Amino acid sequence: MEIAVLLILSACIGSFLNVVIHRLPENKSLIFPASHCPECGQKIKPWQNIPVISYLLLLGRCAQCKVKIPVRYLIVEILTPLIILFLYMFFGLSLEFYKYAVLVLLLIPATFIDIDRQLLLDKITIPGMIIGLSISIFAEPAKFYIPFLSLLAGGGLLMLVALFGQFIYKQESMGGGDIKFGAMIGAFMTIDSIIFSLFTAFFIAAVFSIVGIFSGRLERRSIVPFGPFIALGALVSIGFKNQILQAYLAWIGWK
Ligand SMILES: [Zn+2]
Image (cartoon, rainbow, N blue to C red; front, side):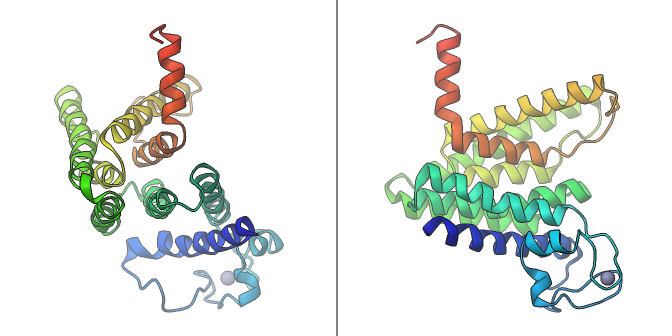
């Protein structure tokens, strides 16, 4: 029962996140006007606004003009409840669950806007830092300094990489958006978790690039947004950091 409510609620939130992804970069109101087809202006009726189900019933097209609805809508409506469900399985309805759920609701729009536009919006990352610091301090007031240090660690590590990249390639490899994004995620985490997140992000990005270049899908100079890898690294860190570290230590024969 709890799980059903959680899934339905987070699918609806996912539906709202689609609106955020579409409207926030264009400085449009998130609430007015009501959802409408950007092609023909047709208002979306309530039965056409049910997460996942409507997309499938309409076969991914506007009911009026049949223009294709980007598959991103379906992906976000499935991904949001899926990740929330994982968090629930790991943490139950604990304070940690709510903290990471809030982080995920920031990660998803930031990541998909980055994929669409190669842009990590200050409008998400700056308030995100404040929200992350507030929740972390509320959760452990005695260790109020930890989220500040993690924020600095997240932003600082990416800034080092950015400076290093500029030195090697003589061009900007990582933007200020990535740095603020890393800092925001740090505000929700401990120092070791954010460092683990970023190393995981670099590792996944490296594998992605190598596979992409060798399979001919990427050029050596292709621009790939780094935000999605940072977000992915954070999720892996939240869910599996301890298991991965233990497996790694066992593998190198340290334990
Ligand atoms: Zn339409």
